[in-house]
Length: 144
Image (cartoon, rainbow, N blue to C red; front, side, top):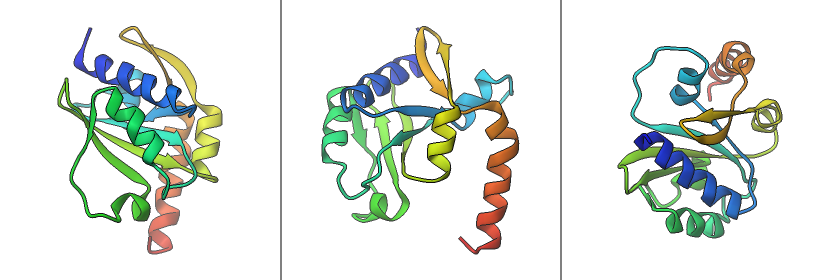
C-alpha cells in the first residue's frame, strides 16, 4: 500500500470517528480523474462549520497519527484550513473546514472512489473543471 493510501486511511478513520463527512480535492483528486500531476500532499475538505471549535476534530486526527504544522495562533479561524502532517508517512495534509456554501455543494456531488484500497469521496470532475475556476475568478474579482 502507498504512503498516500496510508495517510488517506488514517484521515478517513479520524474524520468518520468525529462524525464528519469529507471529500478529497486538489492534486490527489485530479490524479484519480486522470490528470498527470506530481504532488506530495493531500487536500481534503471536512464538513465542519465551527472553525473556532476544532478541539474534538484535532483529538481524533492526533489519534490517527496526524500532527499540526506550525502556523499563527489564529490561522485556522481566519482561513478555515488546518495544516497537518501524517507523521508515519510525513505527508502534508491541508484540511479545509467546509461550511455552508460552495463546500456543501461540492460535498453533495462528491462520489466514492477506491484509492489503493481506501474508499474516499472525491470532488466531482465537473466541479474541478467548471465550478472551481469560476469560483476562483469571482473571488479574485471581489479582491479576496
